[in-house]
Length: 133
Image 1 (spheres, rainbow, N blue to C red):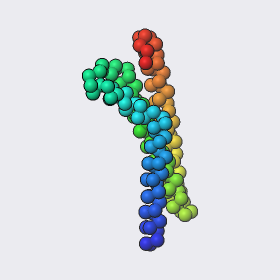
Image 2: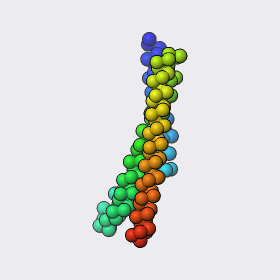
Image 3: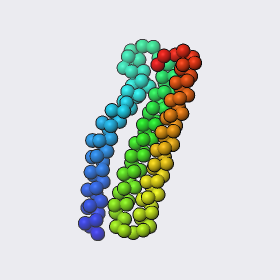
Image 4: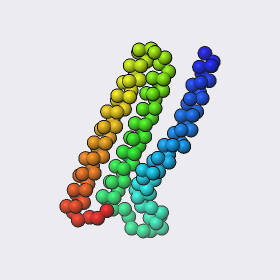
């Protein structure tokens, strides 16, 4: 029993290491920090620059929320794989892991659809209003 607990602690440790060494740079590559910077108005807004326009603010909020939901998808996928790995052939645990993975994929499809819809709506609104972002 003690050996299993030690193995679980090691797996959890390496999971967090993986999370911070791989996922954080990936979120930086996909523009999450840039969205946060746009949302806050950048560093210049602290010193009295013009405030952020409403379309930019809404777009940045949507980008942040969708990025965080993508991170939730990754964590659920990782957890589902972890449960499946530790199932050791137990049908009940394998079904639980498959359910987690199935729901994670459905969630990802919803996230991608939400992004596509919001992109279409905001690009149509900005073209109709003549605002360049």
